[in-house]
Image 1 (cartoon, rainbow, N blue to C red):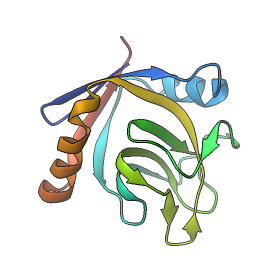
Image 2 (image 1 turned 180 degrees about the horizontal axis):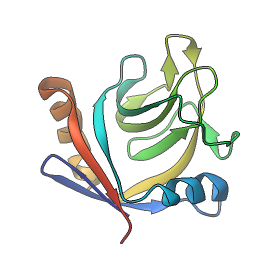
Image 3 (image 1 turned 180 degrees about the vertical axis):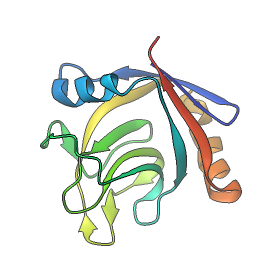
Image 4 (image 1 turned 135 degrees about the horizontal axis):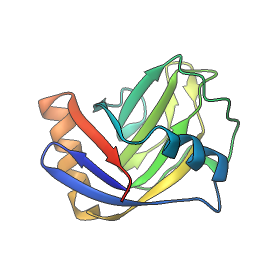
Length: 134
């Protein structure tokens, strides 16, 4: 899939073998256009809030320690439903404490732009983000 944030473009591989249910839910939402903002609790990561959106998913290929470019979908529960987009050192958390999200996609092309994504959301605020199937 392609991901565009500001003038930055990424291509990501869906983790269909490790997170088939999560990938199916996510691809059903495509094309997806939202806003991405700097995470408040998780370190060097941005997030896309979905509020109380119910996805009817449990844990699948979940982690609290995603590497830069490993996208997580948190299906809600302790905190609100969201996508976490790590661009550096990250420990996934909310004001309620540490969380685990479903690692459903990995950035393969554009990894070198992850630091620029971090700078963009941290210093310039919320940005438009678009996910599209390719």
